[in-house]
Length: 419
Image (spheres, rainbow, N blue to C red):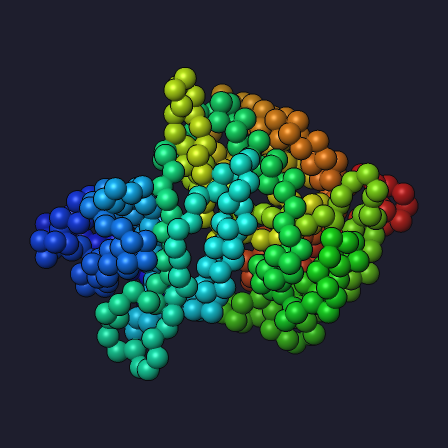
């Protein structure tokens, strides 16, 4: 089975270093010749952008995409992102073409939507196209690139994965606050909210998308019913080979009964259910960072919205990936750290905690409502993020634990304990 290309190996057995690609291609020694044609990529970019590619400075790989830094004749440098998986390849077993196309459409719409938002410095998209599966049987390696999604951007100055501790922390917090405060148009949210909802989800919503508690109560209810169906029905992924058992079914009943108590009432002072745009993978690995004239780090772009979504403000996730850890908030809004490296020292832990405290402090200074919204939505957030983080498997144990938490919280709420 195939879902993406392996990184090429050179004639001497070494891993290709990603350099001098154009020279290798023009000399008939493309490292990718067995799986795709680099000349086709260059030709498409040149035709669509009416330019001439003069050099490919570097190519690297992410989990799902190749990334190229291209120089052009009398034009800006470009960044091209080409999928590592071709949906027309024989025995393709990656994400279905329909999902990839929907994802590409959403991401392109986000770049267009945020193009004029100075405080959310998204990359400038110049051209994109969705993947298309070639009709007919698939017996041989495709001779074109139509089965791979493609994005081409004007390259922003800088590189990713730069971490300068507190200096950069301020900018990340400021950008995250700006994203939280941004109000996406309702027509945009109506088109994409359901499509970007994580699995498992209902086929559709029966009420219109709206920034209200009533709508999000419906979303929660629909989400739970789509995840835990009827007893004996499949639950989780097909490969899990699990069905809804009595414990999961009991948890479903507890969750549905508790929902009206777990979602806070609408508040005239707090926009709890205002729609917000979530990046989904916010961090230094998805930002371009350069050094300004005073020697300070400067964020020049935010990219890779592939895992983006639309959520109510009370479910907004301020997580940011920095260096070796993720900076997050606890259920009551305080700073915390996750994704710790193995065997951190006491000094390391104190350093991470300092980063988290500083990031959250600057975040709340830039978006004062954020902390209050998180605190008000702590029960809804616990439920939502628990469902989001489930990867399938052990359904009875997983939902048994969630059901027990729900019953405990419901009793506390009914007895007037908000802790």
